[in-house]
View 1: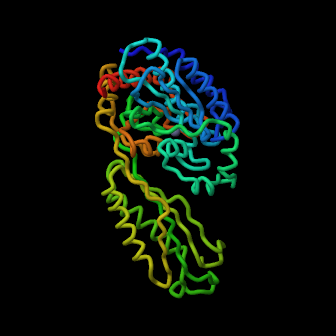
View 2: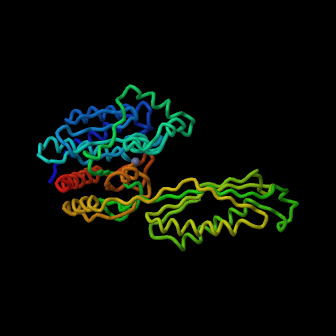
View 3: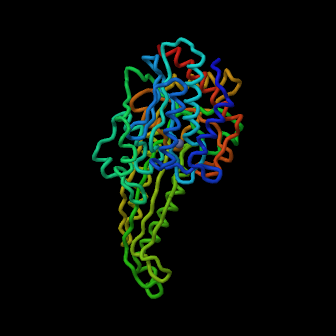
Length: 405
Ligand SMILES: [Zn+2]
């Protein structure tokens, strides 16, 4: 079995959590001073471990196994949301560092080595998956030129902070043969079921909509109910119908959310003239997403009457991402070899693996999140579960390295 150093892993993860520490969590948004410091820290650690490592001018850190012509790529991201948790993507980067380092120390002769990556801006401060998309040359200058943070900061200005770094690292299809990423679950399912290793079956597809209704503002005291063109009630009724119908149509893992509703002009004594509602739903099967969309559009068409006009705008359409069966099987087999029956579950959140899987075989492993909390300073996982997860991933990587030759 591959031997990793659990104490060293924990000490590295704690050291990394000290960069941009905020209360019990971390504030390390992409391109902030602590984010870049964390990336430089990783470069040093990788070099010390014997890899050829550098941060590129997007902020991606790549550590290359100097002796290998073919490699398994492992990693995740070290940027966080504002006031985020200490594990999130840092866990997967910590695992990759420890697994690559212990493999080099063991000095086993494998035809296939290990490359380590930490992608930039997974959390989408400026552009979701900027780093992984850059790695696969999947982002163009025009997109970069217009990308802005929620606060209006330009990505181009952020990129200036790393402008002196070498040109972007690029995926080498002759070299990197597959990708493995570990992450905390960020949900409550594994902990609730007492499961320690999750094999991600697929990353969910997401569809988002903005729904606008148009009616007429009028005095809410003097306009009879039957004579109103009430844009607010129309969307309230639509929302209730959506909840009812979606419950009936859902698969076990389907989730949906009405994330916002705004009434205009927004006063107790004025019939709303306009209303806006945000809807999203997620599932691992495109058929389920299609079914939801078809039903939702039919309900919106029904609501589009009685003097109220309804407009539906699609704002995001992300297809589900399948994981590579042989890689998922290697993770599962490693869990079993360590005495743990793995659980197969979808990822309800997006990850870099979603981008990576479009270009090379990819798989993901989850470890439990205490209380299911993430993107929050309270995010945590027990040390025992963290080290166990690294052991399991290390053996999965070892198996993949033997098999992909
Ligand atoms: Zn993450």
